[in-house]
Amino acid sequence: MITDALLQLSVAQAVTASAVSTNTIDLGTNRDVGAGSDLYVVFTVDVAATAAGAATVTFQVISSAAAALTSPAIISQTDAIPKTDLTIGRKPIVLCINSQVLNALPIGQRYLGAQYTVATGPLTAGSFSAFITDSDISVNKNYPSGFTVA
Image 1: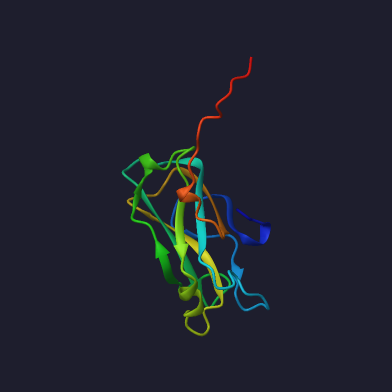
Image 2: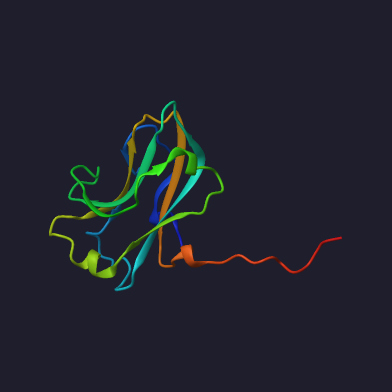
């Protein structure tokens, strides 16, 4: 998996109400993001989500004509995930961005980002990170090391 600072959409971003990512990817610059391959947006929980009520968060990949990600188009999203499932150490949330979707974005959809939609909130705590990679880490398997340290 390859990641760098230019592909980070959020870095431990505190979210208590619906918000867009603090960073965007500018698709209008002279580069080909993904170069014809599927990309994946990986969301991780940095601080467990808490709320007085039964809050949920929907994680979305969005595009917009504005760098501030206003009036976004939703490219991909999760179902609403309950706060009880948004704990530190949970399996990362992975959304695929099909290469054909990026190529088919309407003219003017220059910026790519993430959106956190909080329902039945607000959250009293919660922090998330999101980055773009070319590897689907949801299929990774971890195995025991097979050795012990004495």
